Picture 1 (cartoon, one colour):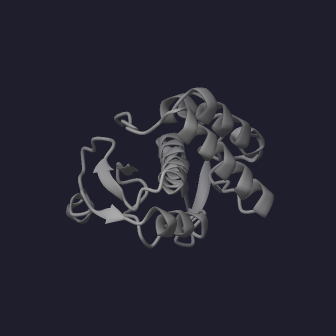
Picture 2 (cartoon, helix red, strand yellow):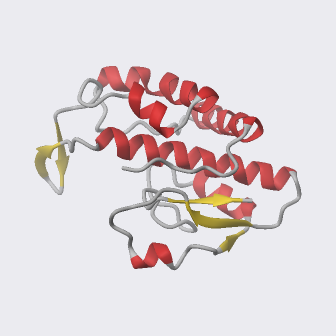
Length: 170
């Protein structure tokens, strides 16, 4: 998969991202994928924090190697199946992006910006038409932040699929 182009990823947004990770930990809602094995769950938070402080989603994925930190199988639709080889990519991109979006929302709120805009942050070989229709859409940063805080581990209501390659900018 291609790398994200996070247009607003600066030190201020990174600090807001770290605040949001800490908020989730304090609230007891920090997301740990069931695809991670116990070792993976034990290092995941540290890897995410390291990546937010000094890297990006690719650095996060380099730390959270597949298959070292992942279960071999998972239960899906009541059936046991192999955890896909791209599990690390999916988790690292989606969760880094989720915290990036939350960080950008906080920066927009702090700066008095009334809306953030959806853009394609990562090129995708399979582009969903419904995702493409979201590009250029403006969202209230307060509403989006609240939605993301309340949809840990699941699809938010206001934002297209979190793994679509879409993200936001001020």
